[in-house]
Length: 271
Ligand SMILES: [Zn+2]
Image (cartoon, rainbow, N blue to C red):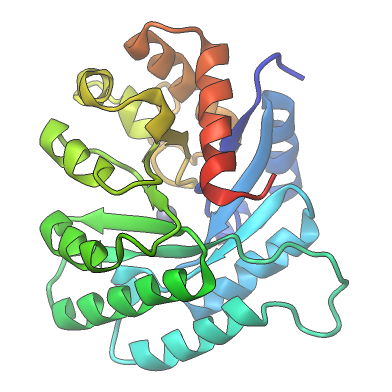
């Protein structure tokens, strides 16, 4: 076991990309020092696969349930009804007791990068799920692309009652970082993008984001860090992100691991 340990707060380990060798991927993560992996769902179907994978790795994998903005289509209301049910009663009776309950609502948000076809529906679906976070007092795992102003406007309405959350895969500028950090108990999810050659994150983050406001993530199988860029990502590869973050902040890798882990404990309250 490495000296420093960390938590991967966003990994699509239920994806079919991992169907062949999921046990080995988890084993490599454990050996690399990853002590927990959080799995986001994107729709009803993946809520079930996320819960199944988490049941398979109790105490290691934890589920987050929600409807991803790119999955908001004509049937979004039905999907939301089912996911709301699952958030409250996630475990079928035949499952053993003591398995992981959902630790967050996600991933949810707004995404106008590819299409604005369901713009209005995305706004409604996001707001509905933000209300669940207030109702169930669960943190949010938020995905946002090309829609930060719209997203912030909705969150502001509930800011005082929200327990917190993660703005996952943050890639913005200083102004955008500052705007997001105005929400108490919210942190930025940082992953492979930090290591990309053209990334401005190594300058932006130390300039305006205290280490207390950062958590680590892979977004695996996507966003593999340099030198794995373009390959299938996995939780063990976060070491490359840790190294780059330590350089950017001028601290040791142990400090990065320790601080980000305690940030996760504070936001998710699971440990
Ligand atoms: Zn994701």
